[in-house]
Image (tube, rainbow, N blue to C red; front, side, top):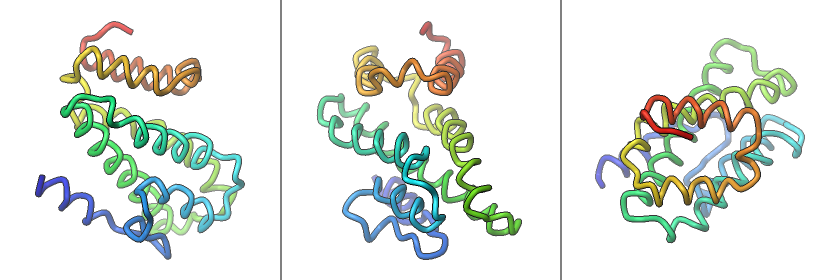
Length: 159
């Protein structure tokens, strides 16, 4: 538990975004959208924020291991996004259009290591099914399918 809290509070916050002041870690995506000047119809809002909140709301339906997986994965995804934004700042390539366009690829790709690092492979079939149900029709999204296929392959699981 200490490690989870340490990681959670160690996530550095770029610019004016402060994920800890928000009522939910998911608010990070809204703040980032605003700070970067991204259009509201982007990955950060339509996918990252939406599903972050959706999984947060349905977390109680998961086993204890599934709940830890969701909590740790949420922190991991935010950290990876924050790290990517820091890299953009360091390389002086932050421009609203440029960054907003790249964020979706970064976001989708970060799911693979975050899921694997947080023991997705050890989740029960029931918890994996709950993830699929929570994603709903998004499971048909080409990017989601690619990420899901990569994760399942790493775990030696069938889709």
